[in-house]
Image (tube, rainbow over all chains, first blue to last red; front, side):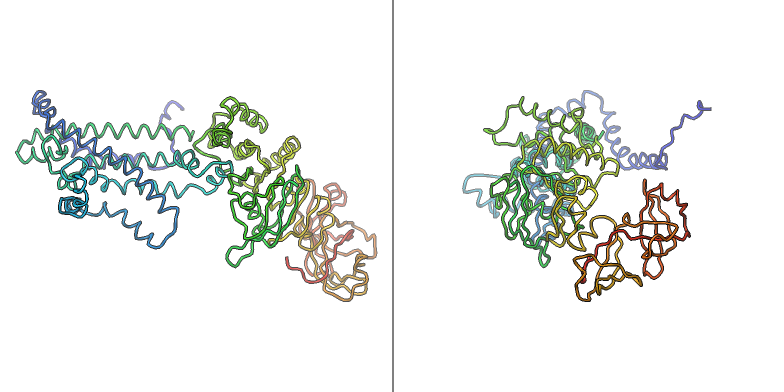
Length: 278
Length: 357
């Protein structure tokens, strides 16, 4: 009768129900809304689509969005790692306060952050005044965008590394010291590889968030065509001109690139994990 | 001297973990630090390794004062209870770690490192696992890799912190014998910490019994087991029956019974006493063989491998007495629960005064 037993038994019950729920939920919340972009773009036809997404202004905005998000995520990797380290490893007064501050960029309306940065870095602002001495300008430049994105992406890195760092047993480091490793060698050869998957996750999240960020960037970017226009702004300005198809075309490309990057990073992570846990 | 500790003291707040402890260990010996949990034995080991700083005292390893050196300059091999292997590195990389972090001038060539690591892994019988990750190994295998890793840097001394306590009984025993054999081959001065008296007795050249941060006794396993200097050591090394009573006129009271006191206590004035009897130093028979025999009833029978454990309730004795008899005797005498027996006490140790255990 083995012929009829095609269904494999799973120890964890409720796979069918929970999987069904997951698929339904993702469909309702993510796939269906996002597919609207796709269906909105199709009636456009191939040629107008290509023209819309390869316009020099649009291409420049893609380049800007991805490069600023990338640099901001890299910076966050270092700053986030350091902050997580301090929060996990040391005890000091005001630690709870510092810990809470990390999450603030999550909670704050991003436009508020944008306005704050714009005020701070404007030629009259506190930082802007000082930087003006060396003829440095942050506002209306890609650097300004990177600064805003660093702020937005920071909590993702801290919060993904923190629990993993807390898990590292003291004995591992003691073992390395006993074997003659310096603090730096211990960090680089033992701790960093250990933290790497979490770091990669955090950086990916910060990067993904940076690509889509709108509110905080537009105030500090100045939105100069070909120079400081980010991709989400291109979409907004097309919508302002009632060019709905054009807007969804730009959005579709943005979506595809982002999604394939996330897929790729996930694959890297999985491959990393597989090696150690057979 | 392989290891020389002079007047080590360490306190954690109010708590005195190590209390003015001195200890000398000859080069090449394998020493067990034995004591109950919280007695300071692990702290002492960590102090020797430099993982903990002593409040005062001196640590001399192979004639070099290392008191104030950080762990990485002490050149000490440390084996942790829970292995502490580097999860993201293969077995080979784990063992090679200590060589690869050496300053460039002292670092052996790549080929030499490979040869040394392969040699060590062969020594611990793990040469088949070069490319495995720690998560792919069993506990016993991990601990052997950890040992090879500690030996890779040619340590002055090897320190093992309850190295087998996380393993199951069978593997533990196997590794114990294997470690003894390995030590006979490599002769590095070694200290291992344990709370398991059996392990200490079987493995060590010399046992150091520690209690409350002080050394109670040190000596060969034979000496410590046969001639414990005080009630604590006697009690800690193996199972024991304890009876509280008084010593008077060369006689020790044991409930309503009186036994001859040991020679050295024949002439002491009246004192409180504690009488210790090992379960295997008790004779059991069905007929009275001696006027001093106690009469009792078997209350409990326990199978303990080759030995049978008996719990016997004796007349005129408060509290039952634990005895161990060979299986053969148990069968021949047809012993069972509820059977009336006569108990001969072959050997007692008496300690006077109140000793807290």
